[in-house]
Image (cartoon, rainbow, N blue to C red; front, side, top):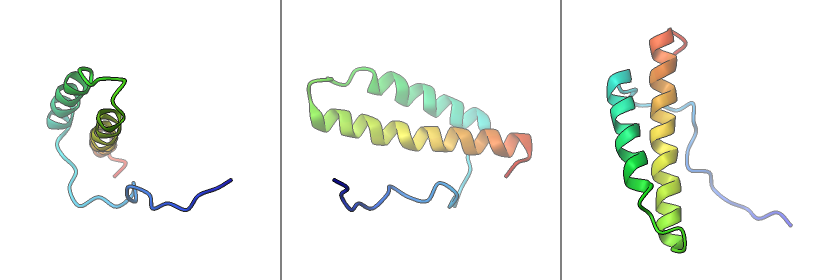
Length: 70
């Protein structure tokens, strides 16, 4: 059974791409923060997933920009 949903956003739609060092620092910071989340708390897991989603998108966009692919 398929449910209708709205995606978090268009991964190709970027208003700002951070510099690579900034994206790496932020990814490390958020990863360390989210590692402390309680795996038994559904709300914390959702917040962790969303937070990691956004830093991963920024990190990949920064890597693409660094390589000249953006």
